Length: 361
Image (cartoon, rainbow, N blue to C red):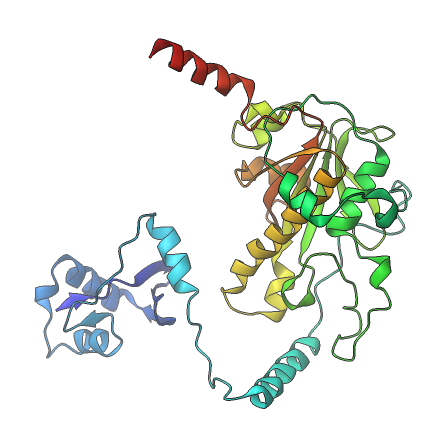
């Protein structure tokens, strides 16, 4: 007999939860079942077909007659569990044609809209301390073609710290995260009331689940600090002063980025995703949406003549505290920044080591 290799065990008093993350089944085990499973994990040969607990394990595919092949996986077990555990989510009925899909999807959306929507962004529109950003006119501000921006964009790691203008920051935020005024009339019968807002990047389910927090170190006309951006109001609200520790300390020790004048922490509102998609696969979509917004930010910055840098290496606990998101269903996932630099792919410190190594060799 063999133990199923796709089992994940959770300790949830008073039970152990055994989750088969391959076929999305879960079982609660009491103390007797848990003790017996421990014995069988240590020695599967102890399986007794006359033992009702053992037979229950066999029926539930916790144990199997034949070994179940498991694919080679170069990463850690947690990444394997996440990837396989969010594959092939079960459906009661897979639509056979577009008519069936439309019927199912409309029923799902109606069910979702019958429940209370997640609360709006934390920014209070009546906050007297909000900073209104200059209006953005993309056609007048951005020069050149999309092809030029795509060919010119590259990751840089050497910045001067030279300030940005408030107008540049306004353009970056509006075209990356803002609810576009140019699309306010872009209504459609299929768009539910209250979900008409549109950004430049696509969003799963039209939920606009991402938010932005601006790390301002050097912007003309704006006090240094960390600001929450309102996509609807195109305005900033101060949520924290700049920490005493440098930016690199928040980004897993990447201190070459400390001179960066402006950065954007991109978060995901998991509560928005849960509201419409009550399954773990939606977690994948959080990162997909963050990626869309990050690329848009970089292309806009490149078109403004700025160098860009990005990272997913966050010192999460510190960033959450800085943004006021500790134990919140909104979580930071990514960081992207821009400023004036010399366009070097690597920082001077690393290049010095590389050159020294070449000389030694």
